[in-house]
Length: 488
Image 1 (tube, rainbow, N blue to C red):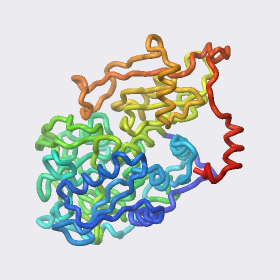
Image 2: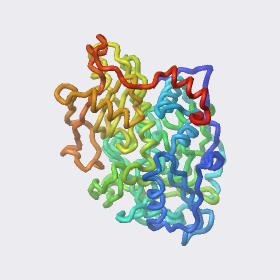
Image 3: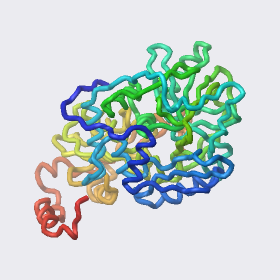
Image 4: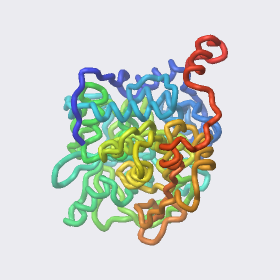
């Protein structure tokens, strides 16, 4: 990914998770809850507050968890609102359309200069260091997130740090971590993900792989770890978005660049042929669809944590859930970048609808300029890095349809779409085993929907006129009646 510097650049203005929480509280979007149990209650409360919130659910900070000291907290629901996504990325909090945040994020990534992390000698994460027999991951209020989960998971809103054994670059990925006992945790990594490639390279050579699992961190790092990005360290990208390097300390066991202000970090190694049964876990498509199977695990050697640590959590629920927006915005920005990089003109919006979730229902909004423009956009969006993993529906619409408004998208699909000629299919695409209908070999099939006005009818002006209020009249009415139409 080549980034060009720009003189006009906005930056992330908060510093670390605790400053982020202060900002979220100032926005009126933080809910503090005392007394909820680690056993199912915290995860269930989050789902109940999120499932029908329509993007308004708060971030939830749990404290006074039974069996744990006051101050040992958990945080759920980082990204249940667009405002919190914008805050995390250093973008304006106000927007006219949901796709505006995707466009701004895309532009930031295109015009940003990456900054590698800066090593410092000390940081809050070193306030407490546990080694040897003192290592105990259940020192923290690790939740049982869902009623039918069989184990507690310490890593859900986490950043699993691995290093490529050839080039030496560090990747941060959001991979789930099941707790087996005080010093053994799982690390489930899907095929094709960077962390899995790093592990496979090491195992193919008969070597163990060192791992650092950051279980409480700046939300920006969690967001980047959850995003489809090229082979550039998320630490470098985060530095570019902040406008200054991320301060890191050298991990006592791994030697990895660990964020100095991280809340909780587990250092350890995963060894070839050492596997344990992993799962089941309620996953991001809303099902227990991934069979429990033997998977490599991590032997935890060192635990680093701050005083009064905050364990970050993002269990997946039946959509709409707290991570749908996070994955959707990040994936949409990558799709937008791929479309432009492929020379597709007039991209006006990309949105992954939260009920999808992630890239299961992607809509691309264009202004048609030539025959085949819509189909070109469809196929690139479905096959590029941002859209390739586990997609299902890809839809393209005209410039008058807001890609982020599902009612408008469905209207276009019902009035500008002919099932006989406006469907394309992609077979044997990259799937996820979290898909209850994945095919043998971990494939799936995709449907591409051209919901644009047929280009020849658009060119000739023969398609029926839409009944609507013009942009000019809308502006005049908003100005005349501000008490009816307050600024968005």
